[in-house]
Length: 178
Image 1 (cartoon, rainbow, N blue to C red):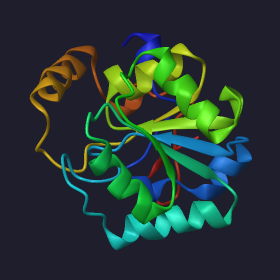
Image 2 (cartoon, rainbow, N blue to C red):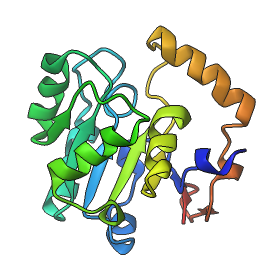
Image 3 (spheres, rainbow, N blue to C red):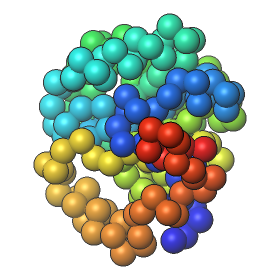
Image 4 (cartoon, rainbow, N blue to C red):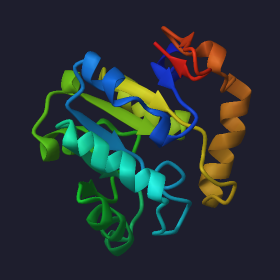
């Protein structure tokens, strides 16, 4: 697998990301993908577990900002409002500008934030291009935008597997962590 497509961490879902791991790595903010990372594609519904996880990171002082390629601000803002977080829509990931705008929104340096998403060619590639920590999650749902389906095929070609993650180890609960 090409190094720039390797995430630093992989977890089974957003709520599986331990806040302690973020804090111990100096993370003060998260740039998060929306579709199939926080909520199913093209939906505004959120699970109670996801809402609780966002409350947990907020209590610990970790800021969050949705970075979405979605062109509809109403949908992105609907989710951001429920979670009481900031957002950037029409981000054009994996372009560097998208992530830099998110960092500016959070008022953080790239060393203080991590990118969380479900796609190698948008979230991981974009975050790695500017030197941020990257966290890859599996997609929440199989339903996706047509363009994303093409990228999923490309992910299979380059080998989207846990064994390619840098600094990866199994914890006692079986989750992939540093």
